[in-house]
Length: 106
Image 1 (cartoon, rainbow, N blue to C red):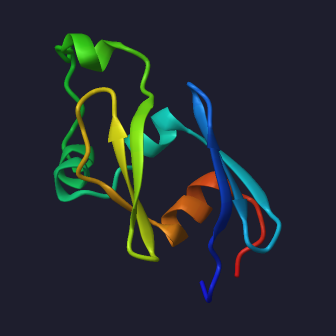
Image 2: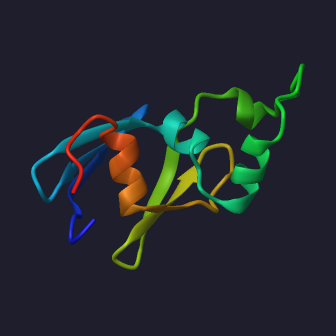
Image 3: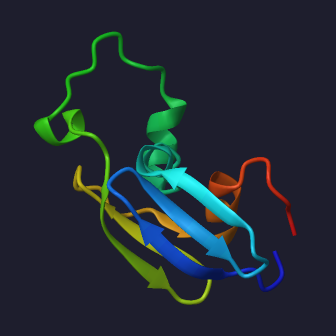
């Protein structure tokens, strides 16, 4: 994705808004980001068949939101979620794909 990068990031309790360097504005919910976490643990969990009656912890039963977001070099962001998960590294390409699912691609 060439030199596409976020110009601005803003957050609400429910979503992240990214204004990209090409002027496109994308929106993505924290739940979508948490569900699409690219870490190895989450990828394995998504590949397993769903449980018939999952037992949720108190943290898992709460609406998902971010508690922190940190740049990783010039290519990604690491997001801390309120359920305690923080190991996913979201590349700029993945953030663009999730925030602009039908938008322009570079």
